[in-house]
Image (tube, rainbow, N blue to C red; front, top):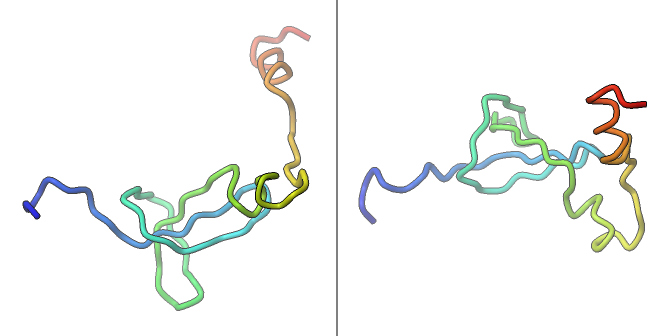
Length: 81
């Protein structure tokens, strides 16, 4: 491999914000936020809205608690209620 042209590949922790589920994996994505993992090491923390723990395809049921639809968010943003 040529040096200096590839992104930094490192271990990171992804956290599903809807369920709190966390998993450690490799990624080129980084984050300023960190978390101490079960092995005692500190890793960058990346928060995601959906993972295999909350996606209906993998769970077989709807677990996601939607705090508001897209239309409601739009109306709230532009004070259109």
